[in-house]
Length: 394
Image (tube, rainbow, N blue to C red; front, side, top):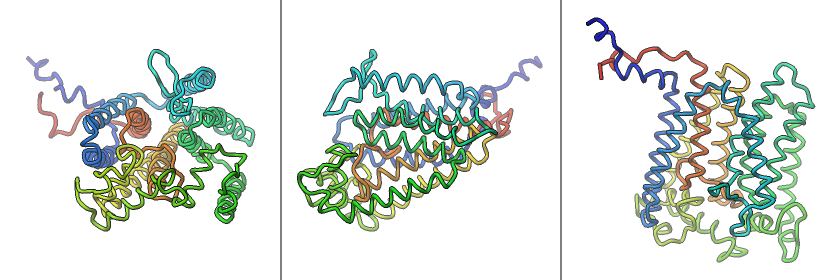
């Protein structure tokens, strides 16, 4: 009889799976997911099943997050070299015999059609974190050179496809690992200053550089057009500048409080291109205004802050670098998307996390969050039992 009474409840048996979860992070994810569902319902209600598919993608990402969170960081580290090698091999295969759509060769058929560059968003920081963990305590300048080579190989292959947006995301995730590993400021400052100088020169000489017939050596023609359109969208208001102009009109027309849920005229009269994907922030801004934007931006700021806090408390260099990289991935996604929709950055294919429609991006973010949660769990000893109020036999 005593064995029957001593038998643990179902909740007691499954609680270790949730023990050590970072609940502030969970609450932030629920908040941002809720905003994403509301925005998608309004922007995509006449786009077939996009709202339901968006919810399904969120559930899939949540499942991946939960599964990856169960894997200790030291085991995740074992996946670094195989995943990076697989990703680079697939990128080479894409360059040799990949599938071309809309002028870009980004996909390959391996039984199912996949986009290998998406793998590198996680494989790249994973590989660099593994490299610096192996070199911990004996880091020298050549180690950062090796890290730079490891980063530029996939970035170069992705840019060749061409896919500027994904290459920027992969580069940002890799550079964040290199920076957090202790890259000296004397090596950071020169490229930053050169970049600022280049931007200043482009802005100053914009009429001459963007004149018809002028071709830039370092950028493809479509990339050059994106930069020139950013500087002056009215150059081609019904063509390449249409996205930026309509996005800015929608954001501005939202005012302080917005036009209200399901009441955005720019959105529902279909003036906003890609209103459920890359430009959903414009649709959201029109309906929820400056106040809604502040809520969304605050959510992303807190998410990045929480990720950095988890990185600061990580017990290993690998965990610290991976958590920091994941936090910066979310910063890059949100900053670039909002920036391009607002007309302060060139238009590139970067989704807004939790808000934009897209299964592949959602799965990638779920995987990244799973890594972050794994690092958070590893830094604390999970409770053996659930709280007393939850110990009722199920």
